[in-house]
Amino acid sequence: MASPLIAPSILSADFAKLGEEIAAVARPGETRADWVHVDVMDAHFVPNLTLGLPVVQSILKSTDVPIDCHLMIDDPDRWAIGYAEAGAYNVTVHAEAAADPVMLAKNLRAAGAKAGLSIKPGTPLEPHLETLKHYDTLLVMSVEPGFGGQSFIADVLEKVRTARRLVDTGHLKLVVEIDGGINADTIEQAAEAGVDCFVAGSAVYGAEDPGRAVAALRAQAARLRVS
Image 1 (cartoon, rainbow, N blue to C red):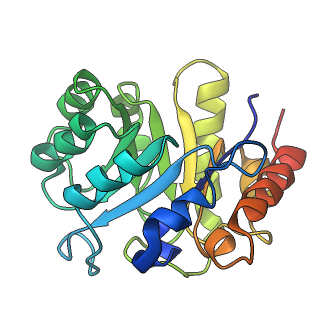
Image 2: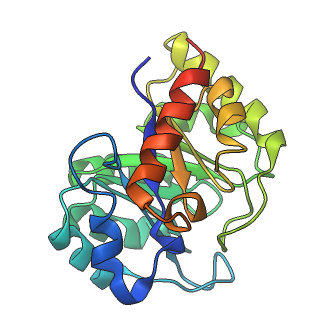
């Protein structure tokens, strides 16, 4: 399996110096993030309000690290394409919010992005397996979406294991991503379950050196991932 991907979440960064915070994980070498994770929240699908397309467009101009947009919004069928057209590497929508997720995946790809599908902790994986054949990323939420700093919900790892088996047997072709409560205490169990990409917020931006935190998390995951 390929090297684990680490995607620092700017939800935990200092928004007053966002460019500097992203630059701190964009230096060449082992301290460089694989993706930068951007949480877009609309105060409707989730109770929090963060940022939108204009900020993402500014971020895209400031870094060459691939941008991983996680849209926690109502009506992603209408709004998600703009993030792909802006240049986001991966645009993830929620299965609970998308009206026509198969068509949305096709439209995201046509607009130049990878297509991601996310499921909340309480959402079962099985009803979405056929839909996931059209997607490039499965984002398993390991906290309730809406706020950073929550505790990791280990029960979701059974969904990760199922997805990992389906990827390994060729039934799905996608990156298995996890988001919520990932840190030095939880990344090993997520890695053992078969996660490819680890979103980490406070574990990176709460560290004295965010880049070194990225390198440490990647090394820790690499030791424990299933082979």
